[in-house]
Amino acid sequence: MSYSLPEFLAHAVALEHEAAERYLELADMMEAHRNDAVAAIFRDMNRFSKMHHDEVKARAGALELPRLKSWEYRWSAPPEQGGEEAFDYMLEPYNALRYARENEMRAREYYRSVAAEASDPEVKRLAAEFAAEEAEHVAALEQWIAQTPRPAMAWDADPDPLQPAP
Ligand code: ZN
Image (cartoon, rainbow, N blue to C red; front, side):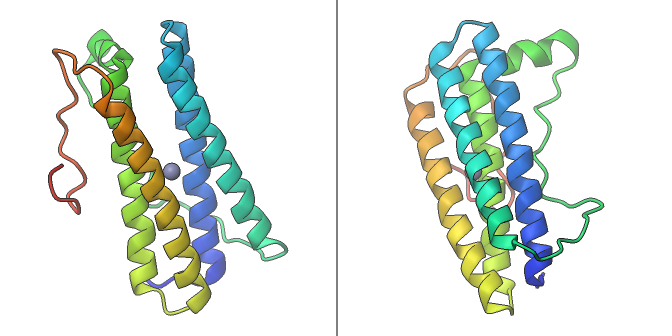
């Protein structure tokens, strides 16, 4: 998909805004269950997403960004386990971190595909830059996942189909 600059920026703003909101929810959830260490990680991720959102808005400046009706790179919903179970499932820091990682990987793939397909050189440049930022977020989450005990009921959802198995 080859976007114009305003189209691309509109998607980036939406993506970062959604990431910021999801991280805030995850942080509150962890905090409510006294997992301050993991809550702090999600608060940091929330801050990074907000900063990125603001940078993209600044980059857009006076450009008028199109309104997006819907798009395919929204965060995926947490795994459906039904009722109370789904909630318990996401309370496991390991599962919450894996969920965040999967969505960061989706963002990275999104920016990579835009960078690969863009005909506008500025879109190409920015998308490559954003993909590199998302790759850093994925790496940060992977470090935390490696240090987090794997629960009995672990997140086993398939990674994004674009990705090789971890
Ligand atoms: Zn990110």
